[in-house]
Amino acid sequence: MSNKLDSIVINNPQRRTWGYRLRDITIVSATVSLWILFVTQTYLTVTSSNFLAEQAYVLQILKLTAIDFVAVFVILHVWVLYERVLFRLRLRAYRRSMEEQAAQPKLEAKPAEPQAIAHPKEISEYPQHEYATR
Image 1 (cartoon, rainbow, N blue to C red):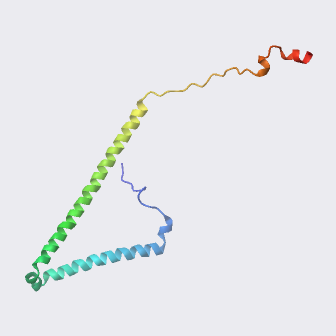
Image 2: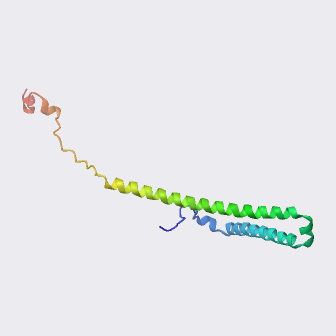
Image 3: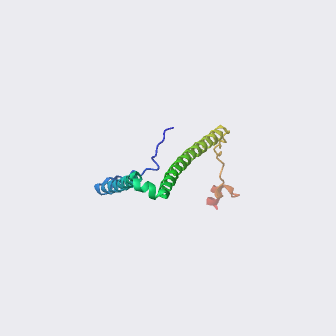
């Protein structure tokens, strides 16, 4: 079974316009530039000699931030793996139930046999030709 995201990814041709593409490029570039700014500022702060002597607690904060980032990363990946396993288990259970359903004997309905329908003319005591003679 291949991993297809057809039901998740929205395939909307109206979202392919230049306005949407420019918006997406702007959001991505702003996010990347903020990460670059954060990493550069952290590198410059940590490499300065005065920083190490004066602010040791900031190093602890940076260590906690790194640990938190790794922890969130690991938790998200474990959650994705767990969801995949659940999906596969549900899919197997569904397939088994469909196989069991197919293996059960099927009840076939026989078509109803045509029955004689009594019309009021045929039920009368006298035949139809007697009415005409009276």
